[in-house]
Length: 177
Image (tube, rainbow, N blue to C red; front, side, top):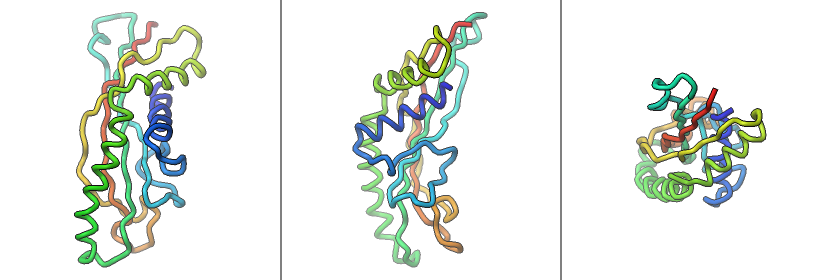
């Protein structure tokens, strides 16, 4: 429930405060965009779970650290590769704009864990503790091509979109058993 709550909270924060419409941003199980995805699509995915520093020192606490990935996918033009170079160069500017927009709404934002905690409270038994430490920016991956099958491209098309992933880590939840 914690992972689901955190991913939904990140999605909600991006939709509400980074000015992306609902059909431009959603939680996905992987980086595959739906077949009806617009030319710009923000994909929120699972970012992993790790034991926190006090997890091993305590018999009664589950100290867990969660992560979320946010991928920005922009559809490539359907042109021969040698005519896409200028587009790709200009696209780095576009990725930077989207990164800054999302970054300011997710990195170290108490509103994200407050929303995640609201999901947890609604779905888990009473008395469960929520997140106490927010997500923090961890890394910005390179721009990479998304194969056609990942971004609903045409058969035989080598790349249908370009994707860049922002990694957030460090959302911490302590649960007392």
